[in-house]
Length: 351
Image (cartoon, rainbow, N blue to C red; front, side, top):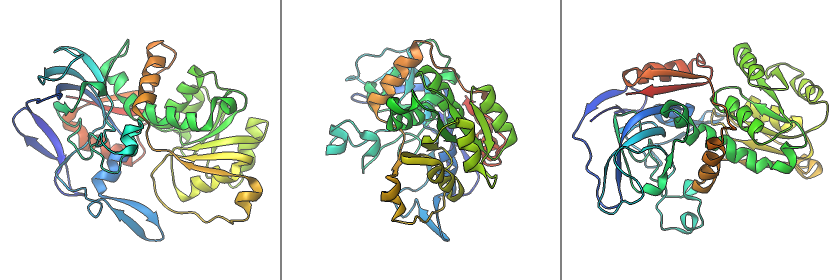
């Protein structure tokens, strides 16, 4: 097999050649058919997260060290199964749930493997989909593609799941009755708009600094698209919603977007932050209880949520985001274009 790996943080990806893995026990080996290029891949490639105030969170200090095969949005075809793997056969096409935990701790036992403190996530702690083969520890992490192509299905493993889980934290009782604010019209923001349609949402006002992405948001069904950098962005967002905004989902996660999201929601509202761009923010503490504001972080989603999402996708209710297919050998070029903000939708690598 071959893969494109991080051999040093911040350095060019390196082509690696090694024997195909042999599945043991419950393991399943898949031939990779498509892998989404996610913004979090950039942070892993860099080797740090920006914490604001000149501080960085080093991934190496947290136990993550090269070599790393990136890629956690993966769809593939079963190539071989271990002797204890049941429920899948060679030739089956599946999309992979990559947020795998230790399987033993209380967090995993309650179904929240994605929050495990000893994660084994594909594309991070375990080799991922920037390769032509990927090894998955158990068939339970493999879900049918349904009517989707591999390239269409792959982004649901992160982009789709992350937005689905964030919408769940806002709650159907809110988003089905009132417009919400969506910050960021990249792959996740556009995916969010598609999911909102499928879930019977009232709609969203979208904020982004890029005019092309605002156009894409309008084409995807946004009620309005405003410039997130405008001095009166909060006023514009509420005016576009024609009502106080009960919630905001922030797919950027910068100091500026956090201020916009937390300032825009009304009393008793919820600000859900998903993005990992980096930075910090200062709150006047008395205003949190006075406004009864909820600030909640959201990290990808559970296996149960992924199953629910893919059942919704199978019904044909969820549209796909604009896709830009690239050969696996252009993985680094795709990452650089993503960093430069040149990709509207999702880049997908196809070996």
